[in-house]
Amino acid sequence: MSEIDEKTKGAGSYHKIVSQEISFSRATGYDKEKTAVVPLARLARLEEDRLRKQEIDDRWQPEDETSRNMVIPVGEIIDVLRAARSVEEVAGVLVEMVANLVPRVLLLWERRGTLYGFASRGMGLEEVKLLTIELPRSFLRDLTCLNLELDSFRGPPRMTEMVERFYEILGGRPNEIMVLPVYVTSEDRWILYGDALDQPLPRFELRLVEVIVSRAGARADLLLDGKKW
Image 1: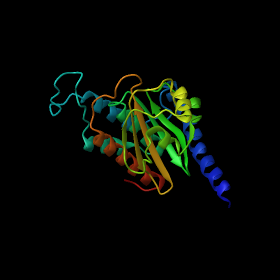
Image 2: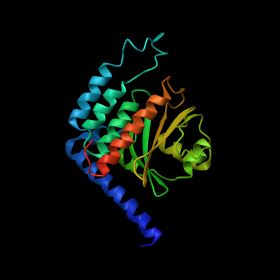
Image 3: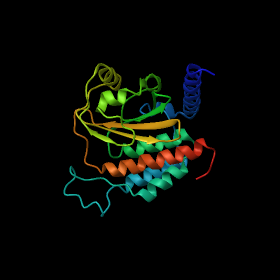
């Protein structure tokens, strides 16, 4: 099989997975929540709600409401991810958790050098628009001036023609962004993107988000491999 055929097969397989999940979300009515394309398992949703109620914790010791450095216990993150039973549910859990820290979250799935829109929160992206996001891997360097093999990025975005088109889809250019990569399998990588549009990103520990993304990637890897965590 030629390299072109391999790429076509990989992209087709990805879109088939997402199309099946969209059909499921329509059947359950979840597609009415247009800021995310993937549904969460009932248990994961209940656990997420419980975590949100526990946001104010004595360990935070915030100086005031605007400077609170939000924390979600890693142990509870693992519990929520364990409740997810499909890669799509893992993606949904991930974007919802990170949305507790960053207002707008987008998850891209990278395969064979192409980035595909996979899940979002707070972006206002309807499912069809989300699925139109398809970018070359070089977009990450255009955006951050880094290769982003393993390192995360937080700072102002670079503006190139490709980046401008990207922000046209997202509905505005932000002042500050975060971009975190995580390897899911030897062929798959997730890129977690977040911004707050014209506001600076809230205060949070970037390392915490890296842990969340890493755990989600590990869970997705095991689910793709057909194993139980």
